[in-house]
Amino acid sequence: MMAQTKKRRINRKKQIKRLSLLALIILLIIFLFVSNFNRMRLWIKGYGFSEQNILLRLDKSWLNEYLELDSALDLETWDTVENDHHYIDYVNYSSNHDVSNEQVVQYVDSFYELYDQLEQAGFSIETCRELMDSLTIDDFQAIVDAGYKYEDIQGYLDINGVIVSDIAAYIDSGLDPLDAVMNVSYPFIDSQNTITTNYQIMEPDDLLVLVKHGFGVSSDYVPDDLVSTNIMVSDSNPDPRLRKEAAEALEKMAEDASKEGYTLAINSAYRSSEDQQAVYDEYFAMYDPVTAASLVAVPGYSEHQLGLSVDLTCKDVIDGVYGVFGDSPDYDWTIAHAHEYGFILRYPEDKTAITGTANEPWHYRYVGVEAATEIYENGWTLEEYIQHHGFTYDLSPE
Image (cartoon, rainbow, N blue to C red; front, side):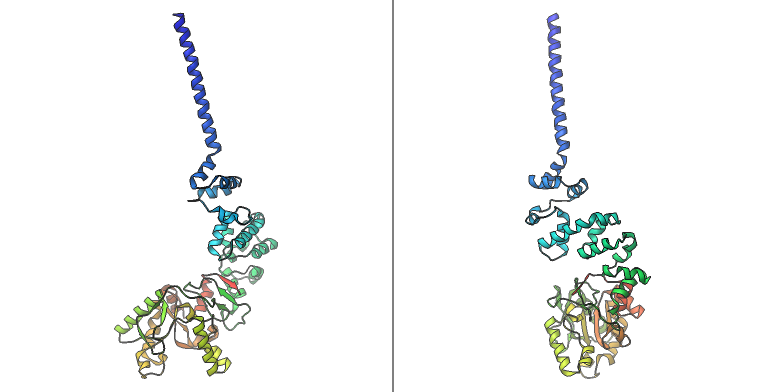
């Protein structure tokens, strides 16, 4: 009996030791799991051991950004350049800017040298990342040097085309942010004012880009969705092309005009920079410089290069019944209905001062139905629309 009792005690002790050992193993596993939880998460996402070591040295808030991504970033691409490991921002910045990896790293790392001061001024990292799409390092430095608080200049920074060096003038103007930016930095939207800076349009595919003296596109810009148009053409342009959306809208407008007994035909549509140069040279050979400059745009500053503008005529003009499109009933129909299809008369007779271009009753520009309707109903030009709404695209001083 005593022997059995002793044996049970021994077995109980062994069992306790086993349970204790099991508990210790479980605790050790839990400890290893917890202490390496983020490493495991990074491993699951596809980061190698050396990449894990880099990311695990980041502050917790920055590390969490990588853990929240759907997939791993290619760190090796950036580690060919000496950097401060701001990989998310390298990827984001490079996706919006056509620059080398070295330039990306230099920009982003330079930004982070200023970030503590920007954060103290009320700039969140989310706000800064949005601003990085358009502001230079000099712009961020100027904001820091001026001691601006984010809440005091947010309204100006929200406007496309804001010029950081003009912020003091915006504030002094007393105007609301949009009016301040437009009037202080871009007074020459109105051609009555002197051009002080030439700007290149960085997103020429935008339907609302303003192309004129002071606002140009790259000479090598060619829209990637040009298509032939399926409406009547004049002998001077056997295969006019427009961007697909504009072409389809024009075909619909011509079809509906035909149903009411009117015809629309194309004299000219898309022109490359080289084509525009030929037209430019021809006009300057025919007219004095002042007259020619009012009739034809300098290459790079012509709407025709956008693939959104079309010079219209009609069958009666082609047949000689009327001398010009502006004298025909077809023109009257077009003026009344073009906005319904997204087109505006680009250079009206009574708006020459603001457009800087002589009356062109044949020249129509596609801007989309919503913008065209607002422009038509208010009697505006594209210049006046932008003055009221601001730019929907980025600009860069040339």
